[in-house]
Length: 251
Image 1 (cartoon, helix red, strand yellow):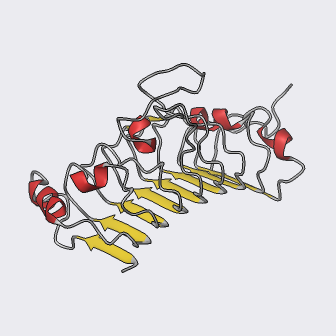
Image 2 (cartoon, helix red, strand yellow; image 1 turned 135 degrees about the vertical axis):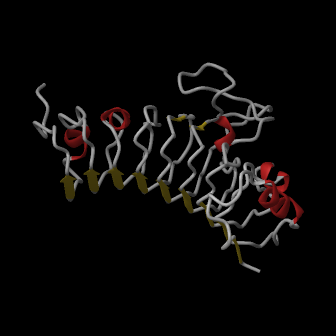
């Protein structure tokens, strides 16, 4: 078996007051086959991921494509950073998720090292044995959309080394995002805010395509974002940014 698709067609978010039944359904399932390549959960009313998914899905060592879609009561996403072959990741309509923190990268038993080099409980880049861990080593495409309460996406050292496409759509409250994407070619931000764009300004040098839509408070492009990518940028698309005054900010 290479594909597992779990969908609920009867749940619409208004008919039930809790997601206990959906939680029980997922918990009662046997973990999918270890050779699984694509995994999708869609239209579930549960509030948590099953316990068999919580230990970094390492059983699914060949997983390439992972999607969580319309999981409105879910508060925390499963740890996915150690999936060596994961290439495509999509989160959509996860209304209660406020943070993509350490738990997004590694499980709770991983040692943590923050983006400024200090040890903390909020980010991770090394194992208990001192061996450097790379999170999401093969991920190429990351889509995040309609996560209306997402505030923070924690930055972790040595993560996303292969990411080429990043889409952030309808995450209007997002204020903190990672800034290190050494292979990023396509950045697409829709219905977002100026603060989300700022981290990208100094550390991106590989962009071929930059698309910004419906950023209503954007007054100028983040400093150095265009300058740092002028030698490779092929497409610049800006739509419905009513406060935009200048594309190239004053030095």
